[in-house]
Image (spheres, rainbow, N blue to C red):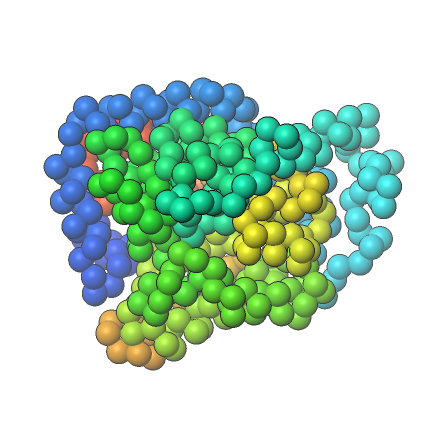
Length: 434
C-alpha cells in the first residue's frame, strides 16, 4: 500500500540518536523542541491536521505525477527535471552562463511555440501562467509598523501583495492557498512545510504562524534552526548578526555572481557558486556554524526555489527581478507564477543538481572560529541520503533519497506527528512511495 514517504521511512529510523548527523552539532535546540512537542495537546495536533487538509482541498491543484522517483540522482540535470515535470517552457534556464546562447531558446523572441516542440497545438497563454501576479486585487503595499516579515523573500512578497495576510501572521489554510496562488507551491510541498513550520515555529494554541519574528507562543519562521539556517546567500548567520533581513553586501555579491557565472542571470550554476561562497564564509568566520545534513538539504532546496519559483514563467532570471524579490519584496513587473506547481520530488531534485555543480560539505564549527568539522566520508548530498546511510534502499534514486530524508526528519517527531503526516496521505506525489 502506498503511504507518504515521510511516514513509511520512519521504520528505518527510531530516534534522532540513531543518526546523529541529522541533529545540530554541539547544540541542544532540537531536543528542547522535542520536549515541547511531547507536551503538545493532541487536540491541537488534530486541529492542525484538519486545517492542513482544508488548505490542500482549497488549493485544488493536481500535483504532477511522474516516474521520476526511479531516476538516479547522478543522472539528474536541469534538462531532465524540466522534461520529467513538463517544464518545457523553461528549457533555456538549464544552461549555465558559459553555454547560454539565443538559438537554444525553447520559445522564440515572439513568444510562440517552435514547430519541433511537443507543445504544438496547446494554448500558449494558458500554458505559460495565470497572468501578472500584481493586479488590482493584489497591489503592493509596503509593510507597516507591526507587520511581520522574515527570511523568505517569496513569503514576504506574497504578504506585501495580500496573497497572505499583510500582518505576516497566517493560519494553515491561508498559508496553503496563498503559497499556491502567489508562488505555485504544490499541496504536497506546502503540507510538509506547514507541518514543520507550525509545529516547530508556530503557536499551536491559536494555530498561527509568523512568517517573520516571534508572535504569540511561536518563534516564527525567523527562529534560527529547522528551516532558517546558516550559510544563507543573502542573509547573515544568526551568530554573526541579523539573520532575517537581507544583507546588502551579500546581495551585491549575488549580483556579481550572476555576472561572473550566469552572464548576468541567475542560473543553477550561478546559484551553486553563490551557495559555495556563503558556505565558505560561514565555515571560516562563524564559530557556531551549523551546516548539518538537514540544513544542507534545506539550503540547496532554497536555491531550487529561487531558480524555479521566483523565476515564475520567465525564461531568464534577471538582476531587476532579483532586486524586486530580495530588496523591494515586490513582484517584478509583469511577473506570473509558473503554470506547473513545484512538488517535493522536484525541489529535492533541484537541491541535488545544484549541490553537484559546486559541492560543499556538511558539518559544524563547535565554538572555535575556522575549525570546521565535516561529516566523515561525505561525497555528495544525494549519496549521503540515497546510499543507504539513513535507511534508503541504497540505489541513489530520488525515491531512496526522499524516503531517507523523510525517515530522518521524522526521527525528531513524537508519534502523534508521524500520524499527522500519515493522515495527510501525501503518498504518490511525483511517483515516490516507500
